[in-house]
Image (cartoon, rainbow, N blue to C red; front, side, top):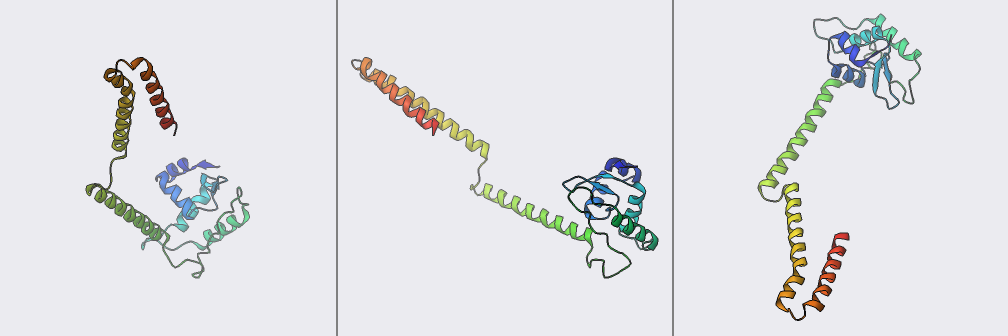
Length: 194
């Protein structure tokens, strides 16, 4: 009986994030249905998922090690199930063989990678704040508003030139002002097109 990741999270009484992380980190493999892109989308066999969860979850000191019979069943189920979609299912490790278990703790490595990303982001943020305080960084919205205001002012001033010429030379106004106005508008249209 297949179920969604959310339903399985309710069944396990844990968060959806925990189930997604278990599926993406390889703790749930044989029981997970995946999309063509390889993302976990459903739990195909909840009982198998429960067994995988127990076997592949890091053990506390007060719990015994993995049950060899369950490990055998998980390996057999993973080998018998055809891969879903174009992405093959990841290989399940034989936990009975100490050479097969990687020499690192996956969750610790994931946490260390996340901490490193956070440190890089904090450093980038500190650099941005320092550049802003030194005046090398300006607010993009404020810069856009300033440029727009200056362009609008220049446009208004240029469009006012023919009127000023008409005031300064009233005897030439009828011949020269329409010519000047046409040339100013042509220049503004070229600038706005560029």
